[in-house]
Length: 144
Image 1: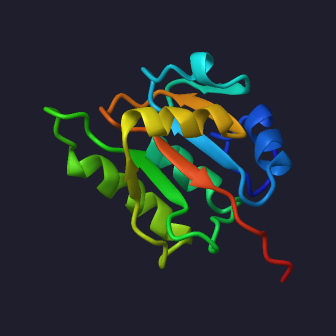
Image 2: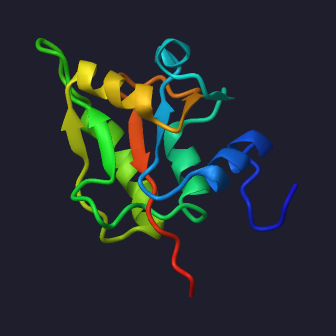
């Protein structure tokens, strides 16, 4: 265990976060997400909810400020409805370290899957909320 790093962050996740470059994306996926089918670098964070993982990751991870939307979530499929509490909980965790972050961009299911294919990594979590997946785009870490 390291000082100042949440115990929710596994050694493998810490290594992935450190290896990511600016513009790389990481998917925090719900427990039902087909991560293994879409990406070759999949980590497990079973039992951990995404808001808690966001709170653990974002003190270590700079969001991209050069894009309009460094946060992407899946839009509801026709006939489904989103639960606004899911995004609200995520944004509460995100705004702890990123108070001025841009709103979440919503993208269709297939477009979200395509982004997952090119993402640096996918973290399958214990999140059970429907449409509970989120993509984080890494920015440049400040030097001071």
